[in-house]
Image (cartoon, rainbow, N blue to C red; front, side, top):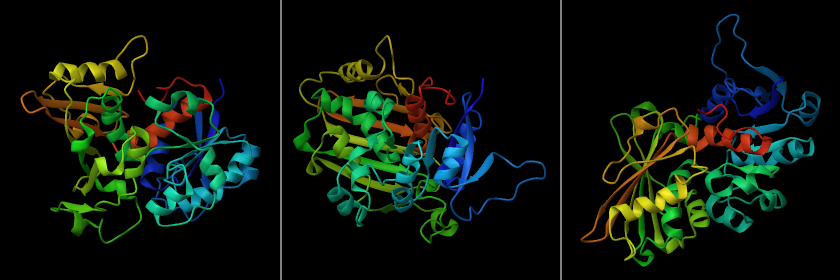
Length: 340
């Protein structure tokens, strides 16, 4: 059976390289590298040329019959190129923040820049499969979620929908990420000497991933406090989420029942969300190089304090793996193809 060609723009960045690696093992597709600038490739051994390469142009999309194009690029590049790729007949899966926030006003506020493609912004479907599966399956333009919001929304949305959280007391999300989340472009903050043996906080109160959590989980900004922190590891996100549980939650088993009802119910349990027994929580090694989001928690019945731990690999479930999950849905392949 012939493989379906799909293109990757931005294949030399960390998320793009992860896409190439995962798609090269996918049973149904052929990855094609779309060159839109000097890629800054690493040297390759003799005899190992890698996937096919084509110019990043609508003509290439048409002639090669690409079914989908991934953008692992800065938002301004995605805005510039998404329209021509759609017009050429390919579905677009964008890993940047260009199409995540729904309105030009939201984009202006959180990204501090004007959005150049408002009509595409309106059309884009937010690609968190666990909550948007049916819309992703019929979308032309899929906006892949950010890494931090993926971990936060998978942990919070079922609890909020069930009324399990006393929202007026606030929700605190203490989020830690490996350095690859900042991308491959060199900067002082992510250089080796700044990161190693260090631990730092950034974007307090104005991290651009916050509105994704608010929009998806239905929270008001005043109810959600998010702090991003950089830890000296390559990959991984671990979020520690604190809240006061409502009177509906009498025991840890009640919280587990909510999660089970959303993620583990038959006949179609979520393939990429794994739950832990009450009192046990995941760490980063549990999810490294996988497309899983692992969720565990501890609950104090006396004070109704709850702490939820949500862990993902920021380059897989937080980027490339989730993008492939969305591609599988959009192209009609099994959702887990190439990911398990």
